[in-house]
Length: 161
Image (cartoon, rainbow, N blue to C red; front, side):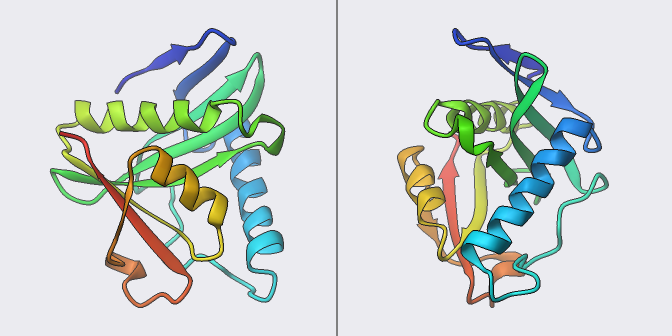
């Protein structure tokens, strides 16, 4: 809904198709990192249904020139709420503000859809992600939806009002 934005460093955040090649590479990198760094003992660490082209309403990719460097998506919950999915930034770009740009873009998109709240799930051992979401104004909330009985999940929410 919000289209494309560019920052002073030349990073462009653009809505793309779910199957965009750069986005697909980053989604796979995220899965590998989560599995190898945070949950090496598990064959599958996704506690809920994996996002797909059918249930993701918008998929954003951050680009540095032609290089895809970060991703984020929105999945609808109902007419007033959405879920942040597939937040990921290439390790070489962490700490650069790319993740914050993507998340703000997702929040702007959610507001344009008339949503008043975003929620998300992250892993219980993924401390850097948890710190990032807290810095961005997200607060811990009870486990919700598919994550309600997950021992691996921590959930956050933020009012967009």
